[in-house]
Length: 369
Image (tube, rainbow, N blue to C red; front, side, top):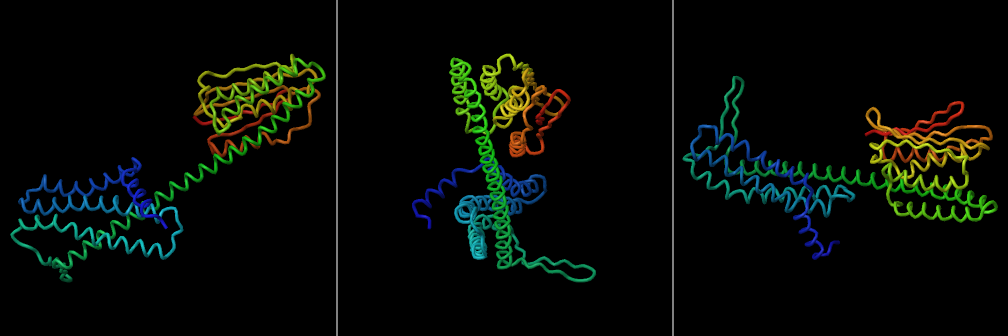
């Protein structure tokens, strides 16, 4: 149960705060109510009393509808109906509340209708339409007109409530999907870090017995790499420029270990550097290329990193040479991980395309603009 003080605070907050889309829709509804009678009275050759009979009730109806939906119906829906389990009892309560609100609206609209009707010299009790087959009589007595007005307001409020509930449900669903997608991408990113750390420690371990100074330099490079990575760990996407800074630190680390066996060629177009892609995309591709293509070979190999705009989007490509002494085939975990992150973040507008030739292995990531 909501405490009265908290209820007043929440109600007041909802009265003052709403999205721009909500205000736009409310303004459109008000204009839709006012424009037709204003056009008729402006361009129609009607007596002044009839103009009042059209415009004054229309203004009163627009004001009452706004107050009813914004001051009462929207806060009630937001506090007790939206994002909650909706059973039959809740729906019946909503219908009863809307019916009571419709009665109140009609009662409050009487002062707007009263002055307008005083100017008319005559009142109508009924309208009779004679056709060839039958006679149709429409009752316009006060009791019947009030009943029709209540039903009309009830229908308007009920439709407004359904549309509001549907819009909030769609908004909540999209927000939940986004949160799940981001959580999954963070999980996949964290899965990469231990894999990379394992490879880096193996490199340092191999260097300790060969050159202690270089091993110390490897540790320094590793600490710099992780300092940069930790400063961006909460982000699921990064620009290509940020990805290159991370990959470059890793390559500096591997260059100490591989020395001249690693021949690097980088060709990243300037207009691609601001493009966004899932975090650790480039590092994943570079790490796989060195681990399965360059490092196992006695003579090392060439690693090429390219990025270009083309067609409707842009692409990032990592190519490594393949020679004798190749290690066992990769399990494909890195590329599968990358595919899943691209699918979560970009859906069908991104693709990972591996291609293998006699002396080269290439992986291209294609992204829409």
